[in-house]
Length: 426
Length: 182
Image 1 (cartoon, chains in turn brown, blue):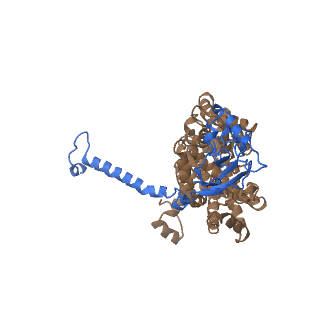
Image 2: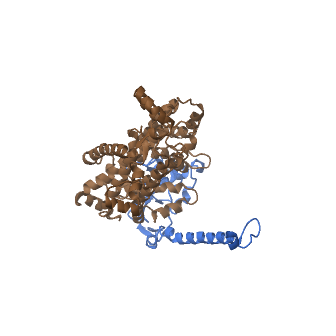
Image 3: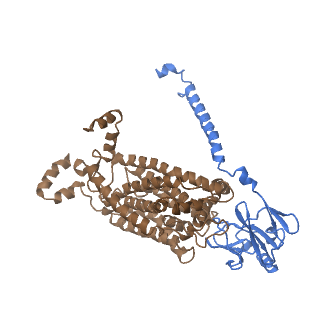
């Protein structure tokens, strides 16, 4: 790391003792080569990082005002909204920040699906990402319980009850999760502790995620490997400025919702304090959990000796866990859907399928939604277990370009092409 | 150098050092598990939570056909004063028609008083059917709005995703009209 240059004496003094500036330069600076053809879909990784920072910053100051007790939690949140300086703004940022975090991460995930970013040698990078998603879901769920509204309470009750489906030890596990015989004060306290802990676990996972990313660098829209320096540009200033631009656009959209429609993504009944004796007529999770909820409820029949409840729970968790083995289900050597005419169509069908599942999850579990949900659930798993392995064998991909720089530099004219060619051989 | 520090291998290249590493590692693993157990067990219900284990209810004001809901260990308990028609309907059902077969006689110590934990055995919602205006489901008992489970006049699951009948808590009659739950 001796290649780092600075004229600043203080930076030189620190760098000699702790080479942190060269470390940053190699991580997100001028010494980190990134493919020159990254599109705006590659902005969503850094946007997810920004979303996480916003959540932690607002979360820490909200924690200073919140009281984790069943008799005071709801009122303490209302006090934040009415009496604490900027409390309304901090809470609306934190509340909608969760939704925006999921929007960004879901786009990031589908970007990876479309361009085959999960394929060798980036399987572990992808799998760490799936673990981050699971940690995010746990954090979001526990955070949603803290305001102790009606939907908070009943979401906690229904979701913790999922574990009672586990054979033999299910009831014991649920009592242990609750610290009592129902969702109560011990439950609220531990959810608060874990809701504060898990974001920092996510920070650690993100660092590992980026570490694995830097091993082989970003995938790119063509899905082919970087062949040499002519295929890359330095991360700084090219992608730092592009990421900053993306953050500006993101913050405009975020601010629009926070200031003009802060409750549009939430459930009004969560502004009614939790009542353990009255279940709301229509229980729905936050929008980012709706597809999984639809999968959970689509299993209405026992299979052999396995009760429907257990199958539903297994399918719901399985819908995410199946992503862990995705690199081995999709055996096609071509990464980018640009060169996979059939996969590209099935990708968009999967996107529509997930939206349908979300719509079913928002509706009551009765005909016709229940049947639509069953078809959509079956298709979701068929996509990964049947369609992808078959496509790996049956599909004839289009020819891949020789390199990332070739289409760009050759298209620029004969003179450019002449200068580019010797470099490509390098 | 490592050779000289070790005694001669006994057989198959195994040494006393291998044994010591396994034994120390195994004991370390057991010790860690023992040390972790208090952390895990601390999350189980504490003594004060367990102490709130019983509640007494006076049944005198509950007329025939009426129902009341009381709290026991944080959960609602349904008490319904059943009419002769309710009891007859529950007893007329052949057991083989029930997903969780249980005769009506096993559901109540006194047939006119049905005492159950009002928590759906599917995912823990509180079923409707206690108040006069509530939907009572297809079997005139209780109906869970969350995922559509129907319970009959003995609180037995008849239709929907719930796997079990509504749970009967432990209770006993202290007098003719005073009952202790828990």
